[in-house]
Image (cartoon, rainbow, N blue to C red; front, side):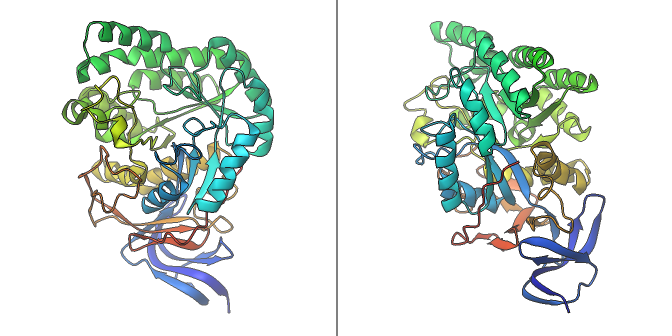
Amino acid sequence: MEHYDLIIRGGSVVLPDRVTQVDIGVRDGKIAAIAAALEGETIQEWDAAGQHVLPGMIDVHVHFSEPGREHWEGFTTGSAMMAAGGCTTFFDMPLNGIPSTVTEEALLEKAKIGSEKSLVDFGLWGGLVPGNEEDLQPLAASGVIGFKAFLSTTGNKEFEAVDDMTLLTGMKKIAALGKILALHSESAAITNWLKAEKETAGLVSADDYLETRPILAEVEAVERALYYSEITGCALHFVHISSASAVSRIEAAKARGMNVTVETCPHYLLYNHDSLREKGTIAKCAPPLREAEEQQRLISLLIEGKFDMLSSDHSPCPYEMKDPKDYNLFQAWGGISGGQFTLLSALELALAHSISLDHVAAWTASNPAARFGLADRKGSIAVGMDADFAIVNLNEPFTVTEDNYHAKHKQSLYMGHTFPSGVAGTIVRGHIVVRNGEVLTSIKEGSWQKP
């Protein structure tokens, strides 16, 4: 008789090619068997009758600010939040910690902290900034997922935007290393010039903010990066793309055979510029939330398969940095807090638009794993893969409250939003870290994942 550590019984399992009711047997952190009415002895059992079992989400874009700014968000609260949302692996961006992750020493320091504190698995981005071109090779050798650079002003003196020469030099080196460069693509020249004009005139409303970061600024930066990629051969990943025009340029590059992928974020799909008008700084991000017509274009592009993946771009800060009593909309820190809600957002969109759950699994798990070198162990439910699962109740609504949002700071654009589905369980390499919606914070099973 077979022996298992865990059997998940009777769930509707989202496999790579179909959704079917089967049992899953887990042994030594791996999926050991998938079968109807699986027989064998087990230490633990999860009754998934009436629930759906998806591959654990891989969120390729979060900002935890440890070391140095743990009071913004750290691995302890951040990973609990991700686990609560069905995420089993996240990739932390390099910019908000002190030091930023632009040297091998900083990378290894952050990895040590994550290994000690994270409830779920994690990968780490390295940074491309002016002056660290010689650090790219040791960062790559030590296991970064890829590299991140900004084409617009960051607002963070520890992580400066790249100039064109740094970008070209960095791209050539990253291509030689076989790595991927992720880009925040907005034109610094356009956005800074428009911002200065508005502030000089004393115009700082929500509409003014949107006008300083137009779609053209995103398109110009995307096109420039694609030209540079053609010259250098560097693989690119475009983060938080917010406009159909930018997607069309990326689609054309893919059609030419370029090595390019693109993500968008749930806040661009569930919300629009009206939220910035109504909620103010809580809804400020860059690129900004677009007008309702553009939001609908982005939803259509998602349905058509033009986005490779969804990510949260969870970018929190203490509320005092957004408090409208002290800062106008231009001065307040920009970023959406919402890492817990990407899978739930994907399910909401799927249910609203009759999208099959295998597409949700592709956006949130298999495509990120394939793109960033983890597909040998993560991203799909198959024998031999890591036993990473998000177990969801499709028909049990989940309303966001301060009590059930596990981020360090509770102020969020998503507060009060009701999702049609909820996360019942999250399992990381066979370890249950969320049970019946409760995060088991004593189960620190997070492991640094290298491509």
